[in-house]
Image (cartoon, rainbow, N blue to C red; front, side):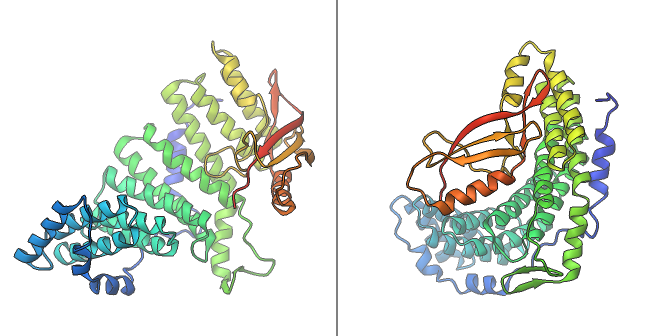
Length: 416
């Protein structure tokens, strides 16, 4: 790898050149149904909830209502405390009502986009998630984002807000919330990019704080490049919902640039790690392995081999070289080898489904068979085996060269 710094050029490209067809991430309007629910909440019933460990909070709420009325400015803070106590007792349905009322009062006293709403909304979302109310959580996340972009002028809090919203887009995609899954991935990329922009502006282009949004952007690109949601017809179809040609074209433009964007993200990670830790550092070598994985994922086998060889060479001069080489290259690794987007469940000793297979030097799965006699349905086992057959692996390496591996045995537990 050249010692010529890459990060300034790469980060500028990532920050300024939004993907084709991409517009700004939009914050949703406050749904009328939410205003209605908050405004009509049975506030007296909420304030009189029996909670043995919260008499001080209940007393404070009662005093405020008596002295300053039902819209007292100090009530949102007290309602937040009460809601958190209800949360800690697992009383999430009641907590949601308390948090909604707190948000409603904060809006009345502080304005539609006052910052005081943020902890109340975050807590309400946590209770919706605990109740499995994902659509409601998604609605509140949209409104939370609207409040955040209007009330947070800049600095670390706004960066964290972008990161939080990007993480939610990722989680909502995995949960299948909403109808346009590919839209989640485009929003995820844009939100991480906005966080990256904030950090570069505030801390410069070699800050370690750039690494979390860059890794989030790489997650998004793996999901975009591997997305399989298209129907055979001219558009995307989700149940009763048909996504029009314009939306499909926009996503196709995203995916057409996925290879280039993912590679640029990884090179930016590599350059930052090299600047901070040195070219022969474990961190820089790991980034080169990430590059090799991305290239192999896209069938660029020769280029992937070169990236792996570069990583191997940079580790070879270290006193602890063998330890790290064995950890990274000692056995085949399923791709993507990245938290949050790994294709297979974690292997675990004593799993219900035990599989034996080989991995060729090109990273292909061969000779796959089930070798357990456990009472697990054939359907679950077959689905897992189909996924495994389609999974590309980083092969095992010996003396810097990829080699095939026979008779790998992995046990998996499939959770419904």
